[in-house]
Length: 75
Image (cartoon, rainbow, N blue to C red):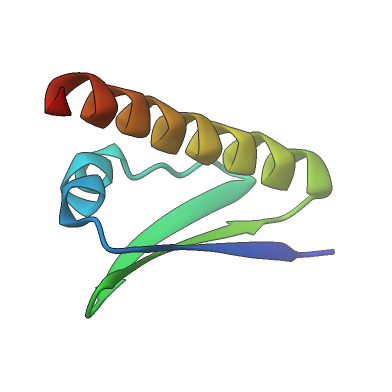
């Protein structure tokens, strides 16, 4: 079975720039990054549910770290 998950983030060009060099691909999964107007779209495609979970968790952690850095540097 194949799986996919799309994460959409509105309003932060900096996140796109931060994630762009981090594109990732394995034999079981890949994620692609695209920008549409004011929205960043992260699409994860996986061959199995474990790979989907791993990539989704990694992406959420990357976004979480980015948000924490932004909050720290904006104060």
